[in-house]
Image: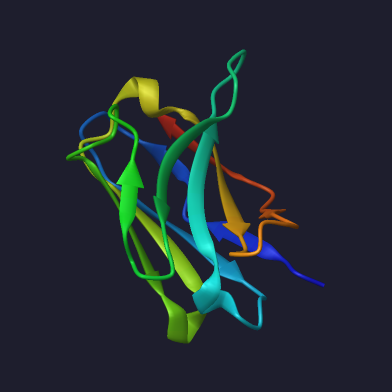
Length: 117
């Protein structure tokens, strides 16, 4: 059974940093496109950043230059380094694994990030 377990969320002041981790129990993790998404209260879930099997990355305009996605295939883990955090980054952050053959996709349970002074 595939599981994605996020960690690293918490409370941070504006301008601070956090690093999220997502550990995946996937036997062919290196083949998957991994992504981070977030959902703020009352809003739809939105893409934050993705990283492909070839380590190509894509990120939302709102986080460009502040957030960096990376992966360690030896550890079956994807990371999201978040710098210069803003109040509007407050959300539950979810990890997603998407196989190259399309389905099924897997989601983690989410980790709360709160940016507040």
